[in-house]
Image 1: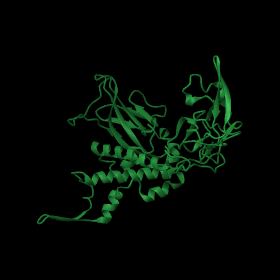
Image 2: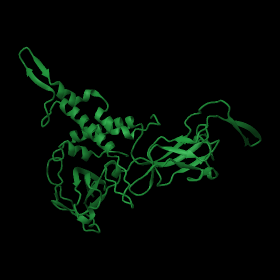
Image 3: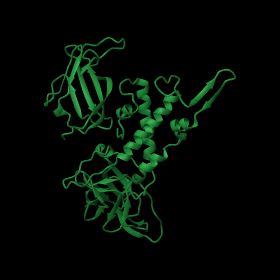
Image 4: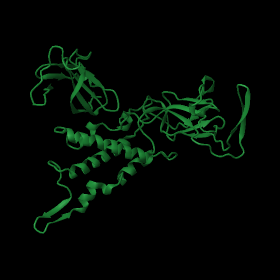
Length: 272
Length: 101
C-alpha cells in the first residue's frame, strides 16, 4: 500500500509510543488515511512514488477543421477523423516525472485506450529524446532527471483523439525525499526535498487524532477538552473558544498553515 | 533487548522447539528494512534468540538504513497452529543518525 506516513511516526509525535492501546492505534491508522486523502485532494495527485500506466488525451478537444487518416479493416476502408487543436505539450496526471526507470510511450491512432486487441503494438513505440521528452528541470540525489510540471513535449504535435497515447512512467517522491533525507548526487549539489508533504500529513494526522481523543467517553491522559468550567446546580458550562478552535480546527479539511506548506507542490495543470 | 510474548491472560508464551520468532523493521508503505528471525543470525550478526525471554540483538552493521521512525513488528510462528507467521505486537522503532556518518 502506497503511503506517506507510517503509524509509528504519528504515534511518536502524539506521545503514545510507550503505552499505546489497540483502540488508539486504530484511531491513528484511520486518521492517517483521512489526512493523506485530504493532502492528496489539495495537491491534486498522489505524491507517492509509483509506476503508472495512463492513456491520453483524456478527451477530444474540438471537432473543428481536423485531420483524417484512412484505415483498412478486412474488406472495408473507412476514414477516421482526428480532431484539431493539436499541441506539442501533453500534461500528465502525476508529478514529478522521474527519468529512471525510463518511461515508455506509444502512439496508436486507433488505440482506443488499449481496449482494441492488438492496439499499441511494438511498432507504435516512440523514443524518448527523439520523438518526445519530458520537461525535465532538475535532478534528484541519484543524479536522475526530474520533471516537476509533468509536461511531455513532442517532436511534432500530439494526437488529439482520446486514448491514442499510452504512457507508462514513474512519478512521485521516494520515502527518503518525503522525509527530507535525500543525499546530494555525485556533484554534491542536487537533492529533492518533499518534506513539506510529509509534515503536512503528520500534522493533519495529529489534529484528527486529537479531535477523536477529546471526544472519547474516557479521555484519561489527554486534555479534558474545551470546557473551561462546568456547574451542576442549574447546569451550565462554558467553552474555551481558543482551545476549541485549536482542537477541532473549525472542521476544515486542511489547516491554512498546511496549505501554505503544500502550495509549491500543487499540480496546477490537473484536477483529480 | 528482551521481548516477552504473552497470551491473552498475561502469561508468557515460551516458543517450542519448532516455533519461531521474528522481528521486522519497516514502514507500511513497503518492504521491511531489516528482518531478524530465530532461524539464523544475519550475516552481520543480528540475532533473535527464542526462549522465555526472547532476546533480540541488532548489530550496528545491520542498522545502515535511513535514520528515522519505523514500526517494529514482532511475529510468532506457532508450529502447532496453522504453521504460519502471526503478528503479536508492534512497537515504535527510532534509528538515530550516527554523528560519524
